[in-house]
Length: 473
Image 1: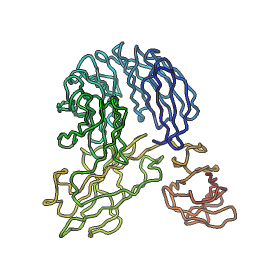
Image 2: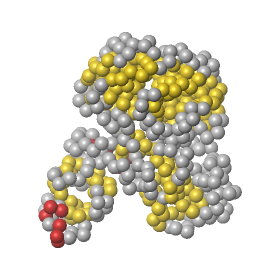
Image 3: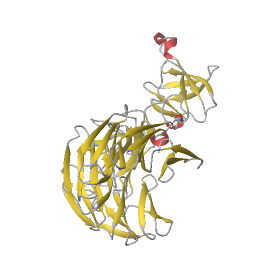
Image 4: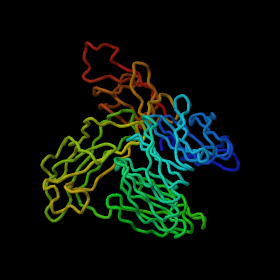
């Protein structure tokens, strides 16, 4: 999502096609024998491709397309990445174990699994990895900190696994028992839900808390409401197989193997309480900070007699623990407020984050709540934010916040002001923009050399308080 590159393993030609999502231009990168699954660590810009009959993984440097081979067990299949710990997990179907790769060194460790582990998924928030063992009707749960394991019984022929990090629920499609096992990540307790005939693919939208399961033989998709476990069937093409969710656009794409088509599913919240929260989006939805300055709005639009807003609760990456109150910055006591995120003990992890906000009106929705999590009044709003390392002078830096230093800083698109407000001066000393602490958009300025001067410009700070910035396209 950060570099806008797509990686497609080509099983029979022993390579990976790299698609530029902006131009659709393609590049071919060599891989091992029978490359099967590709996963991206967006934080390090490394891509990990399992080579089924090569018994290794090809590591692609996303910036240069240079490759490295890392040995694994026998018949490596699924790959999962934890960008927080920079660990990569590879399920080895024929050696009944999981290879753990240290992303910094490419050193490996082996963790035992059950029979025929094929596909797996990681929860970067809890640092748990869930491995579906196709031949054993079990899921192996790996503690990413210790590599200790636990086992959870599931249905027959478990295949795809998907994690909702916001709710800490794990969904496993059981192909031979026509159901989905829902695992509670806190307790490993399991629940079974019916899901068409021969369920195969499973994907999660953490923003809407909807789960989508392709049913290969019944030609439909089972939609699970993560809050209630209620299910709905949506018609697809012939033999729907894989699928993917875009949580930003709330679109679901289903590949139908039998009809060579793609079914596109659009979705929307079933109930709208009219009490809503919204986020002011960061440039590129990307930040280099653990605790960026996040703001938004909260409104009550219920009729006929709406009340004032009580406030907005905020939390990052989990919606089951106590909420912190966001700081109301304007409109207090009215039905339309502005707020800023209050960081308590939480912070953004490296990679993808889900920042949650729940709006409350001053009656706590005692009569307006429509089953969306009493006593919370409004529809939960979840904003995906990517925390990335800061790279200076990289071609893709238009989506990366570059930190200010005493040396000249090359920025593209956005400029980060870490502490004081300031002014941006051009080469002649003329002020061209006022800067506030945090992210400032500079994409409209002409390329060239500029200077940042903090405000107030205290005389005792001297010339060292001025920082040179080079703005590039």
